Length: 201
Ligand code: S3P
Image (cartoon, rainbow, N blue to C red; front, side, top):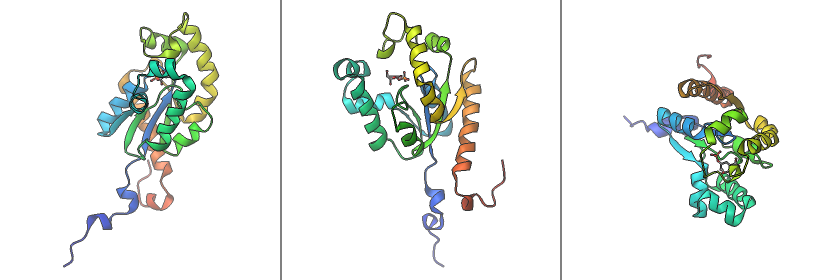
């Protein structure tokens, strides 16, 4: 009797990696903490776009901003998303401004399920105060900078993906909320035929 080749017997849908979870949102909204937690829980690879950019540029982020400017940093972010971001199977935390430039939101949506984390300026201030690796917050009045930048970026964040509020939520609570929205989005992305016969959630 011929041996059944499992790979051949599987549908292409079943052998494809699950869609990436892509976390976007302002600095200090907890993308990295949550991303690491979910990656560990789902046994997926965790990727931090800031670290990837630093590897690509062979420079730390404050050095890129100081020596090459913010525009070059944004160019590197786009290059990384276009050419280096894995097509699936990962949990990805992105730098706070990555999704903002024209076209980036659409590009990210083509690469996974995008969840945007939100927090008030006061919460962001509390979570980021003391950090020296964020060049955009190295000013005399970081809270004012956070307010202005967040207000300017808010429309882009609202358009970018599924919005999740993080204020007053602990990690287990936030993780459960994001897990729910991610798996609901994954179910809704699947073509109708491959959903046939599956129980409705
Ligand atoms: C930035 C956010 C940072 C980092 C860079 C610029 C931004 O990432 O990419 O300092 O423009 O909001 P985090 O959101 O991880 O702090």
